[in-house]
Image (tube, rainbow, N blue to C red; front, side, top):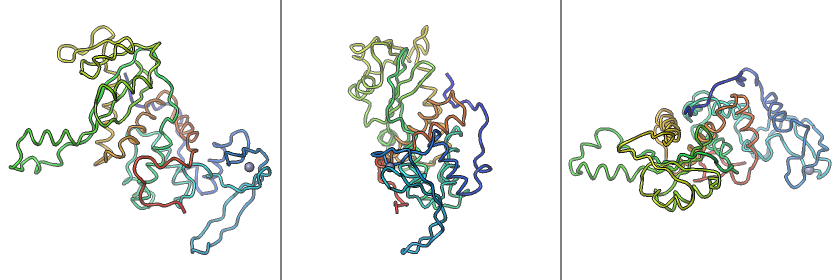
Length: 333
Ligand SMILES: [Zn+2]
């Protein structure tokens, strides 16, 4: 039932082990190419790679470029750096900072707020925010596997609470108007969870039969699954797709093995995290936050170090990391 990452094993403290940018680059190189250097251009992939050092310089636009290691591919003749093709590419933020922040987001239960990063690393709020979102993109499961066995499905609503008691007192609004308005601001999230296992959660515009059935259709191995839900009307016809059992929350929470407490416990972790870490989550960015919690949940049985390695295995893919709204602040240079 536990939805929180278990903290097993030794957690490498990167603040101590990575003292310089050179340390950070060596660390990423070892993680990225454990079996020897490979050309970072996807259309090449050559294995004959030369390494060379470049001295510090100042570009024409006045930007200082620190000394660094570069690689050159013998097959295609192109140069690249250790961050080529990753979410860390073309960033003015030191790689060391990126790695420490990414590791924090992997090992903490509640994620890390941009404010914390801003304070601790002395970067602008925009830069901190931007880093968090790129790292969340890397955490997103791009090719999720189908869920099997006993599957619990449920929906929840995030956000939309009135902002402080003054708003309650606006006399021109009746209580029911206030409630309607508050619900209109809430964003629905639909989730499925294997009993005791993996979660897939998705922000949906509205909880409809179609949205729910589509997610189950694409997310579940229907030949090898039985579904458990509450008696919400949107599940009324889902038994046409796969075996379906219903728990009526008005009268019961558990009947034999029929319940939805696993997915509910995932919602609890998500909501507690969002309330505790972020003052306000814009609905447009909610999918990335949900992906972050899903990533930590689905890797909760491995060690913190393994989870961080799993993330670094997903940092490639430079072209489509602009997800949701256009990220503000840092522009690729
Ligand atoms: Zn090459």
